[in-house]
Image 1: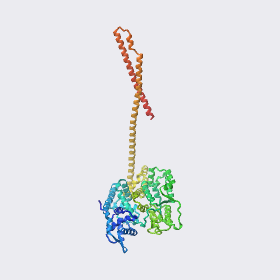
Image 2: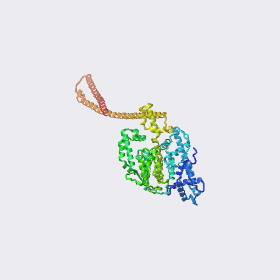
Image 3: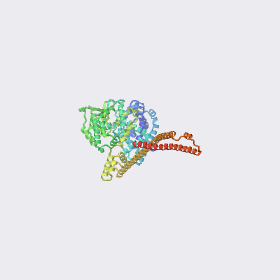
Image 4: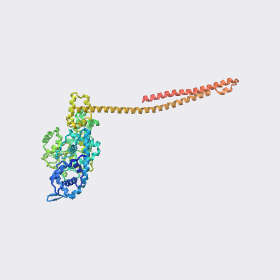
Length: 633
C-alpha cells in the first residue's frame, strides 16, 4: 500500500463526510466533529483564526472564508468545545477529546478506502491505456476531477498542484472513463467515491455567505433553469443525465422552491427542435452533435416525433413541475447594462448571447438592486451548467451586488449543495449520480479532440489515403467518437495518422466481425428452423402413414371378405360332391383333391388381391396426401 499524504484532500473530504455529526439545528453542525479533530491536532489552547484557516486550506486545498470560520467557532462555543473570554476563544480539550474518539479508527478505514480507489485507477490506466501512473499523480488527478465537477469553490482552490511526468494528454477523458468503469464494473468502490463527493458537498457549504438560515422549505426562492438542463430533463442528453436531473428536480420540489423557465428559454428549446427536424428532413446529419446523432439513430427518432415534442413542450414541463413564465415585466430602474454584458460574453467565445443575456438581466432585475445575503429572503436565481456564463456574469455584477451575496447566476452544484444538505437521507444516490453525469458528459463532449480528428480524417480522404467507402463506413460508425476520445488520452488533439489508420482498420474489423457474427446467428437460426421443420415433417409423415395404412387395411380386408363370401356362395361346394355317386375311388380322390386346390387358390386370390389392393391404395393415398400438404404449406 502506498503512503498517503497526511493532508491528502481525498482523505480529508472523506473524513469530513464520515465524521459529520447528527444534524441538530442546521448544516453548520455537520462540521463540528471535523473542527474538533483539527483543534486536537493543532493542540493550542487559544484559537488563531489564521492558523485555523490554514488548517482547513491544508486539508481541502481551499481558502475558507473567515465569515464561515466565525460562524463555526460560535457554534463550537455553544456546544461547549470552546469558551470565550476577553474576545478570545479557548479550547476545552476534554470536550474535544470526547468528540474525536471516533476519528481514530475512521482515519485508518478511510485511508484504506482511498488507497483502494487510487490503486484501481492506476490498474485501470495500465490495462486500458498502457500507461504507468504514479500514486501521487493518480490521487491528484482524481481530486482535481471531482473538484472541477462537484466543487463550487474553484476560485478559492490552491492551484499549485505539481504535475507528474506522464504521457497523459487528456486527463478529463481518463478520469471520466474511470468513473464510468467503477459504475459498470467496480460497483464495490461506489461507496468510497460517494464519500468523497459528499465530503466535497459539505466543504462547499463552508463558502456560503448565509450560515444562519434554518429553513427547510424554500417557497421564497424562484429557480429559473437554463436550456441545457431542460433538454437533459426531457431525455435528450441520454438516460444517465436524465436520471440525475430528475433526482435534482425532485429535491427542489421536495423543498417547495418554485421552478420556472423564461418564455425566451421555451422559444430557444423550440428553436432547437426546429433545427433538428430540418436536419433530419434534409438528411444533413453532419450538422448534429455526434452523440445527438447517435441518440437519434438508436431511438429511431423522426421529424414527426420531434415536432410532437415541440408542440407538447409546455404541457410536458408542467407535468414534471416546471412552469413557463410568460408574463415577466422588466422594471426600468433596475435594468443592467446588457450591451456591456454582451461584449464580455462575446470576448470569451459566445456567438449567440441573446437568450443568456435576457435570462440574466431578468433575474438581476427581479432583485430590484438588492443584495441577497440570506436564504430567508425572497429572490430568484438562474441555474445553468455553463461555467463560463456563471463566471462572466458574476464578475460582471461584482460592483452592483455585495461580495457575499447569493449569486444571480449559479450552477447545478451550487444549488444542489445547500438543497441536498437539507434532506441527504432522502436523496442518498444524488452525489454519485451528479459525478457520474459529469463523467458521461465529459465522455460525450464534442471538444477539440473530436474536431481535430475530423479535420485530419477528411484531409486524408481528400488526399486519397482513405477511400470514400472506408470514410463513410467509419465516419458514421457509433464507436468512432469514443475511440477518438480514447486515443486522445495519449495523443491529445494532435492525433497521428497511424492512429487514424488504426482506428479505421479496427472499425472495419469490427464491422466484418459483426457481419460474420450476424451471418453465424442467421445460419444457426436457419439450422434450428430446418431441424424443427424436419422434426415436424417426420411427425406429419408418420401421421399420414398411419392414416393411409388404416384406410388401405380397411379396403383390403373388405375385399378379402367379399371374395370369400363370393366363393362360398358361387364357388364349388363339397356337398355337391357328396351327392355324386362316384364308384371309382381314384376319380373321387382326384375330384376332392381338385376341390381343395381350387379352395386354396381362392384363398390365395383373396389374400393376394387384398394385399395388392392394400399396397396400391396405401402408396397412392400416402403420396397424394403428402404432396398436397407440403406443396400447399
